[in-house]
Image 1: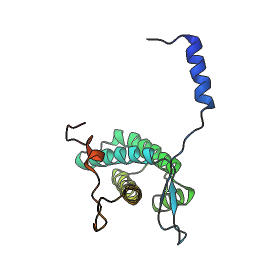
Image 2: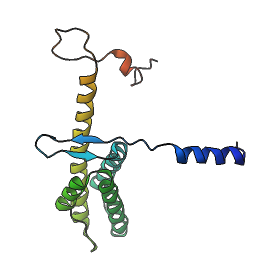
Image 3: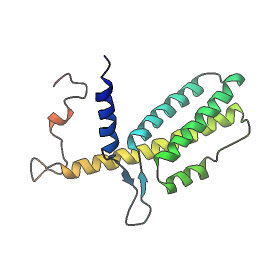
Image 4: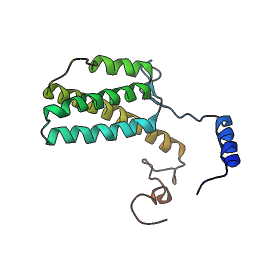
Length: 165
């Protein structure tokens, strides 16, 4: 169903006037000066998922020569997404450990590049999720003062595969 032109125009004005909410995750040790920012955590998770699928696909199947330019473009696009997702120091680290290529690489070098990108992104994703988990635990009140480990309330996990609520 289409909205009237006036309503959609008004919605566009409201969207333009609304402040953009940004959410970044700090990973590393801020005291030691090695902390870096993940500017778009959701984007990092999507890129990580895409890299995992790409890595599995090229590891379990033959890589035909006609598919190599497509894979090279896909890896270049993933690299750009990663560089736009993280802070400049992390982007520089990515360029250092997996420098971009202009020449036509072999199937083996594409597999290696994909493995390096997958490994780096997996490590960063795990650091981000660990940081988010620690922040969540530190903000959640404990049920008993003598607990050495925090068990989250079950209501927080109702939507995760149990069919409740």
